[in-house]
Length: 510
Image 1: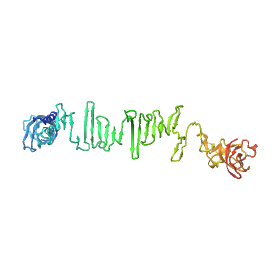
Image 2: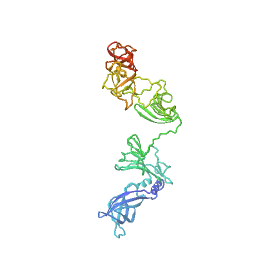
Image 3: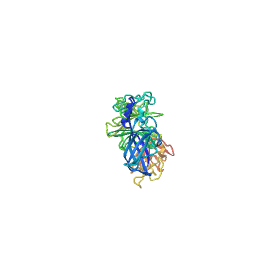
Image 4: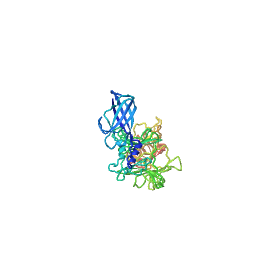
């Protein structure tokens, strides 16, 4: 018969309290209670059934050697299941004087008449029962008893204090104090402290192989750890952190920063690097309780939103570069306001292209419109010829509805206009309807534009009326006014002494 064992020692509370009291009172024999668990085999097989057992404590490890300490502890009819059994043992605390102690176990089948079998080897008693001895000793590592551990009548225990304020009170006056909870187990072993009441349990602790060794606070029974702090100092609430602060919730999530201070108190978040700092936040008394983005040290707020929805850039409510606001006069409109008297233009600008942006609107209403990019009003027309030179005179194509063609005869009453863009003068206003009349080159219908001209009817002087000529795409001055009715292109604004060239014309079709 063989018995392999492991000891799980559990100090009864009375034994601990008794030992604490004996630290300052005469020694009184007090029991030390612990649980002994073993595994019993017979002929190589796990034993089962009831067995009588006897336990004796010795001061030597060898069978037959040493002196028995205390009385024999008998446990008849101990139930053994699958070889495993558990018994509670109670030993006089006086036998624990700091020297090694060994437990001898003897067994036999229950109600058998034969002798007990002595199991070998004797089992060494682990250090836990010596807690009672430590609290009974006349000296504790040179510290007077009572100055290290003190128990009160209400069950509180003080270590380093005579007046414990809680069930367990630790105090160390000479220096710093550390309460260490350590495990030497593998990567899946944990060290933790649990806090339990009738509502449930909170655990705080860590495990080497769990979530990269985070320190956690956990409510047992919930889906995720409520608080996790990584070894890099990252904080996760509801999740293993992937950033310095990482918040997670399976549903909607709100991160609230609140100040209960007075009107000058702020609630803000700051972002800082080696270049400087950005602040985002609000203060009740600052610029009308606006929400702002600011660079500390800058002359003005970079961006702000007022409670009424007004949006500011590069300024505040007293003076700013740009404000986006609902128009109080026409609520259906949105207004772009500027309170800086030195700013008179609104210019959407592309810094990469180095020019102002195109402004696209469905409908537009303006008080005054100034055109800076061109000098004529033009409309696109499909042209019979594939390519005509800018400045060419065009007439209505009577063979193709809606089309124009290059002029080829003098005093042509089908005259329609001049192809815009000659000599670098572009259309100022371009008319078209998307998907309907939006193809072909732009033809100037009014305004100033350069036209290809010749002096076939004489030199052209400023103020001369111009009409079509026999030279394709060219204009000439009117000399036969009877033929010019309905064929006038416009008035010359520059001169052409001889030959061919470009003449600036004020387009006035008639």
